Image 1 (spheres, rainbow, N blue to C red):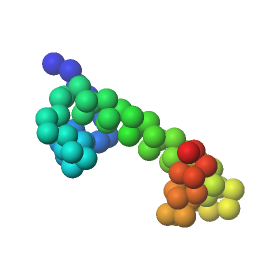
Image 2: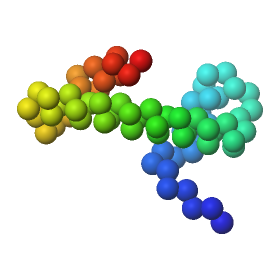
Image 3: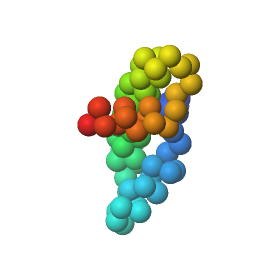
Image 4: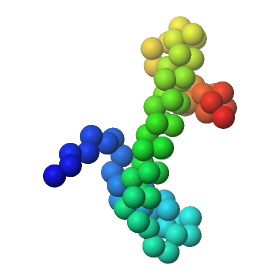
Length: 73
């Protein structure tokens, strides 16, 4: 048995793919997208934290997340 330490549940990932038009979704595609989304989320979060610290805050705000996304893209 494989224990997955992922933060994101797999079912919503499959729904994202289906909502994009996927008729059938393989487990490997769900897992691949989950890993990518988690890495992207981690990158954004780290950048947003730096922005909050630079602004003298310990609270990460939505504006920090939005700016971090723009900086990472």
